[in-house]
Image (tube, rainbow, N blue to C red):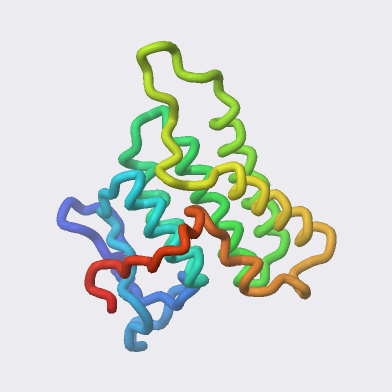
Length: 183
């Protein structure tokens, strides 16, 4: 089998995927919105908004791709934030796929990583603290830790799709802007 490669020879996976990121047969037509590009470069605020929208839509696998893109292009001091948020999105993906053990492990790991980054000593005078990019990090940490504890204690049977639609950005009550190319 030949692997998909980009022009530089790096592996890429061009197979169509379902809403939870599971590869579909190459002969199946693409369903749903297009995938997140492998070479996405995105700012922190844009990554926060797009990942938030994807999580609310029940697409944590795609939110993880956005969060990983932010992680790869973020300044060094922000990388643990983005990596931890990506791990939380993977935990949500595991939960949606029915994998309670994987969900708990990744939700806990991501929560620990973000919390450790947030608990770092404040930036020295003259340096900017790690920005939140409009995300409510304390609420994300509380929701992720609570969800991990519930799944660990009770399994996935009573977890609803709404429980898995984690919010990164607080709802401001104003109308949400659509992504470019979407109505």
